[in-house]
Image 1 (tube, one colour):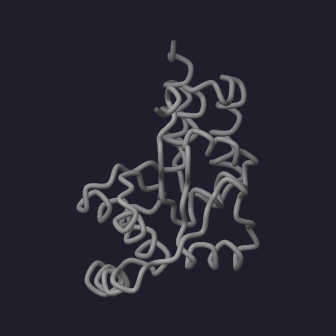
Image 2: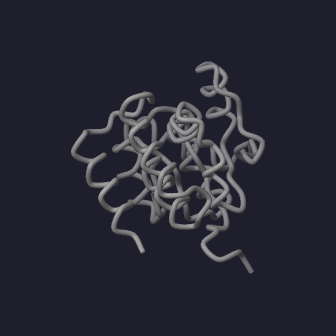
Image 3: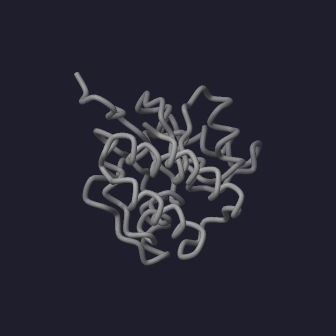
Length: 167
C-alpha cells in the first residue's frame, strides 16, 4: 500500500524535470513512489545539461512498442521524447504522465493517462507537506521568473491564491 498522498508510479517527459531543476525543487518528485523516463528523455536531459535525478529510473522501450512511437511522432506530431514517454507509460501500464507540453498532454489524455505538469507537482508537494506555504509560493513565482516554463502571470496569481486558501 502506498503512503498517503504518494502517487505510485509515473512516467515523465523532459519538461517537468528541467523546470523543477531550474527552481531547485526536484525533491517535489518525492510525491511519486517511482518515476520512469525513456532513454530518449535521458538524452534530452543530458543535452540540456540537466542530470537525471537519482529518484528517476531510465527504462528502455521493448521492440514491440517502438512502432507506437512512430505513430505518435508521425500521426500526432509529437516530439520524440514526448512520444517515447507516452509509449513507456503504456508499456509499463503506468497511468500517470508528467508533461508541460499541451500537445503531449492532449495525446496522453486520449490514451487515458492522468496528466500532471510542473505547477501541479509543486501544488501536490505543498499539499503533501513536502514543502511549506512560503516555499510553495516562492517556487511558483520562480517558475515565472527563473525557469524556461512558459507560464502567465495570471496563472501564477491563481496558483498562489489556491496555495493561500488551502487548509
